[in-house]
Image (cartoon, rainbow, N blue to C red; front, side):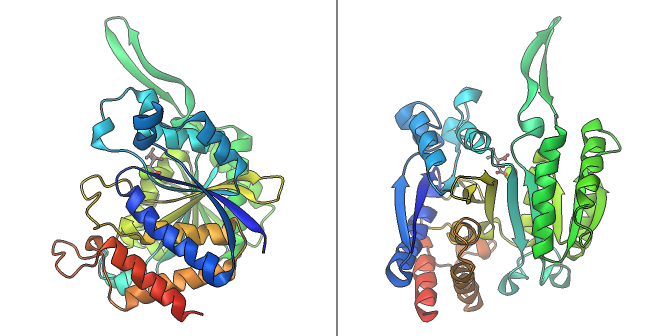
Length: 367
Ligand code: IPM
Ligand code: MG
């Protein structure tokens, strides 16, 4: 078995506690499945700011560039709200995405059977839901120049710029078409071509890329209508491709359709490295949840499922990824719930570590 190198960045809030459970899962794969992992751990976000004075130290970035994959917990917290923009915890994450050029962000929204009553939508609207949002992650209004707060006359003006080059649209579109080919061959592209020139170009380029994928049924939607359709009839979608900002919004919306943000993993992929593996960062979609951090209440499943995505996309170990995903599903089917999956009344919930125990027990059964 080849050795895989992993950089683990637990980050802030509940990041460290969910990552503890991921470490146990990784150890299981090392012990029981003979997988070889070289693991380095470092700080990111507020945790890095506290020690290094920056949310992403240059040596951490260099390590991120050297490893096969990065696994990140979460960044941010109220303690850092008043920091300068440049050193806010979120800048650490954004810089990682940008410097590793992780342009394709895969955010699956899957409604686990055992959880379909937790959605705010009716059970039959969401049960069996399985869609994938592919969000462009390294350009658009998140990074476009000019940006800043400037003075014009006697008042200030805040500026951000939506900017997309053809090649930026092309590469993320291609990634989305390829993913659609591995799924149900349906791709819906979302922008605001009715209002934004960048949207007009987006639609044109996606359509052009589509000519190379005749098997894929391509459709286009304005992003606002897309949000509406996602809540009306989410099962009409297979893969959605959209820009950075719309993808941020639509993926939170899609996440909530499934009942809990605590369940959803993500993968951010870039161009292939010399070893043929894509540059990659895996992280749960949930944030740092400072209100519940340190109490053993958080759900480690999204982060564990993010590691499953690493097994699949970085290490091409589909079989092991399935094993881990099945273990998570079995634990849910057995009725185990962390507090986030119990709504108001968290009385019968299990702790973060107990959830980790249960997943390990299911993994043992899979042998
Ligand atoms: C996300 C988050 C980030 C984003 C923040 C933490 C910078 O909301 O990954 O969706 O806006 O991209
Ligand atoms: Mg977001």
